[in-house]
Image 1 (cartoon, rainbow, N blue to C red):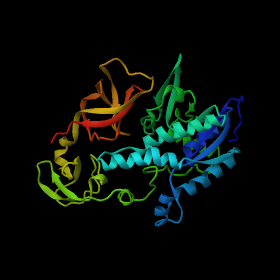
Image 2 (cartoon, helix red, strand yellow):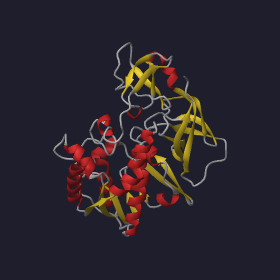
Image 3 (cartoon, one colour):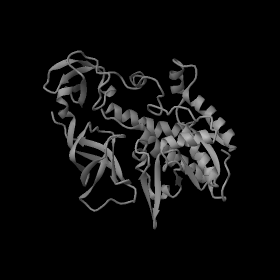
Image 4 (cartoon, helix red, strand yellow):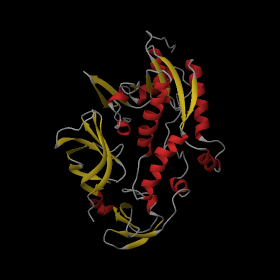
Length: 366
């Protein structure tokens, strides 16, 4: 497909990762008449590269930059690499380590969006004279009178609104999500039609700064292993864990004990360095009827009158659960599984993102 540009619009800085989603986003913006330039954000440090090079010939970001260059050559647009390593380490990775050491499970992808893509990158783009930034997120925006709304992506399997619940009104007026109204299959088809070199490139997996290194191997470089007892919910000692930082609530893989499993992580008791697990037949201990949250953010700029009813996600890809919110307490209408301190609660009214916060406390049934 030849990209025929429409009536000239504004200047857009596209955050291009080297994947198919951001590539198609750039192509669609060109087709719509925008003046498009691509930016590759290098967020991870040479220190991590050195660890990665111990197992691989080349680091993932080097391959990604080559893909970005090939995409931009195909589209006929300029690109440049922009370095946010310091911002990433100070605002994302340090927080990740602090929360992990405290026994919580932070989500670095949410933090990366909050602090880097839609803060540092947006500020830089506006400073350079761009009118908008664009990403390949599966999300949508809508202007109602003078208020911007953030909406789920139409592809329910790919919706990424959970990761960007923190966006505010000032940011939303400068952000475009060109593929948010498409299904993933449609994006792949467009990539083929636009003859993009990454049309068949697999989607990236895992945490943004790890690549395909084993998570425990990576974390051991930064968090000291402190083994301790691993017990069933009734107190029966089943063995030793490798260190509470290496586990998360609801985890099944990596527990490494015999018996009549499978086993799941129920709780991490920091006070006595104990990992509490349950057998498959006792999974009710993983359920919570409520949680509390901190660091609240509301897309509109203000929370609804309390108490208010809405739906909530307690993790990415978990089903929406109906709930009632009063202050910083969320009461679920049905028990939620594996509610995890450090993760995020994101509130919805149908497809509209209301806001969210960081899970602080939860009901523990042991």
